Length: 490
Picture 1 (cartoon, rainbow, N blue to C red):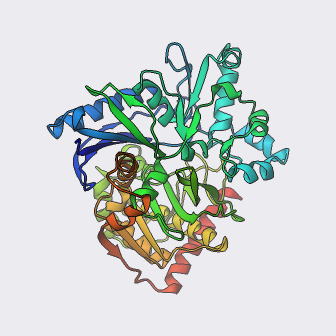
Picture 2 (cartoon, rainbow, N blue to C red; picture 1 turned 30 degrees about the vertical axis):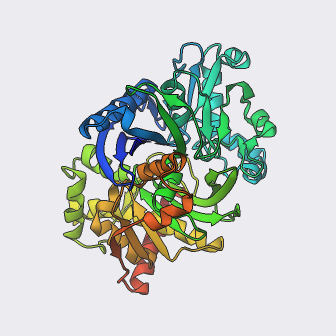
């Protein structure tokens, strides 16, 4: 019997393929960076061919590193950057336009018109989402409106839309499967998360033809098979990356929460079978869907987290590598009076201000590199507290937080996070939890585990960070952050 699972984690700035054994221990990893393109202010794109090439290349590399073959794989799980929008020609498989990335803000004007037309309540009631360029619906319409002849082709059923999972599946299965899962569908602003279907009223509102849409499946399901790795391997799970991390962190009970610090930051709270409606600009979404039953989640999305470290390294040249930021920040502590609001492409939850732009405040002649680097790292923690407070106001506040993603390796950031939130922060042994969640889903389909609830017992702690900061200091620092944000949003 095949004893291994392949997890593909296609992210915004990199692609990883990780092999897991039956005990869900990582055996081999391959990774490639993914170039981003910025053709105009606020526009962010990928070349879809780069995405596909990186997925196939890293999958083959990981299998080779482990000394295995495709015949050793019981299944594949795919986790992907969500909301990123691709439209392609069904006959050729070629995209008609570059992938429009979730960070892209080109449809801000459309979203403002929808808000002015009071479409917000309808969209929130059906999708759990807020009107914002972040989601796929306005991106699809933009592509169809700006590529000559695209709308006519779409109406004839010649074009297909998909988020990255769907695009990858189409090509991995030899153009046989045009499918997505419920977690990715829930992020399009076209899917009714209560009735679990594409919604005609929303399709009409956004002018998106039903003919371009994929069929929606459970998060763990049979999605087809790929022959591109040497022999046929079934694809048994697909999931949006943040929901993948929720599963990978074993947050499969109501009230459990995880926060992922990758390019952006995403705090996701499991709300069980209740689609908890937020009164504080958080998103209601699908955490996962197994055997036709949806488990819901409350989510706060921060557009810039690890990306600020990348910018300080590559743009400002303040640090030589991401790892060095920890020592630089630790050299001056946390109380230096500088606040860095990294609104490079607007602000996400709970502000939802697509026009906001970044700023560094509190600069004096004494300010140096260490203060700015520290402030950049602290910004991630301040934004997490924004989300924590919104969740508490919505009626469900986690008393522990499981963390993952690249920045979770930074002990200074994680300790400041615990101090600022006033809760215990738990870092797992396997920090690549998005890939682990995809592996769990594939493992569920392959019979390696009997239930998604089993993931709770498989989770292992690497290190725990407990708060030591006093309430007065915590509140004073956070009040300074709130003043800084008000300067760029008011």
